[in-house]
Length: 159
Image 1 (spheres, rainbow, N blue to C red):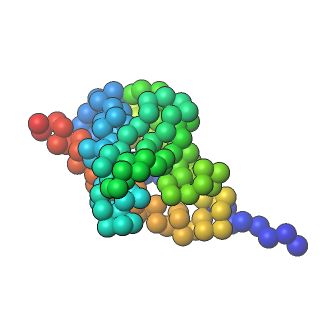
Image 2 (spheres, one colour):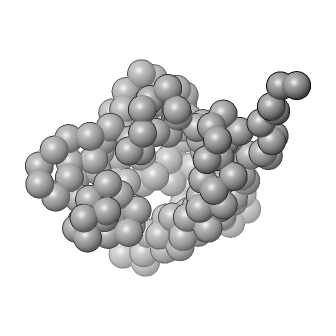
């Protein structure tokens, strides 16, 4: 009898931010280094450090990069969708081989209050550690999306 991998539903997170879609998209992507919690959610954080830089190459096939505290430039993801103001998708493999990537899609849609940002993260059932990874990202995306990104958007408006 063949072992079956448990099917794990994708994680779904949302936040509404007080910015128009194009500005929310730009802050999420090009401004990632300004709001991402690198002190806790990075490769450098494994060494108790903060990354020197986070950057997004703005095109399909581009990458999300971390320049670590000691100057190494390491990939986090490969960009699979790039529609400014609308969609940002990537194969997420921070600290893992690229073939073990999970899939993240961030959709920006108009809201009466600004922009609704919907994040879906799936593909956890591809690996044996998928259940643990899904649980970790469930709380991690709450901090990253609602806490850090939402706070950065509110600060942008207040500035």
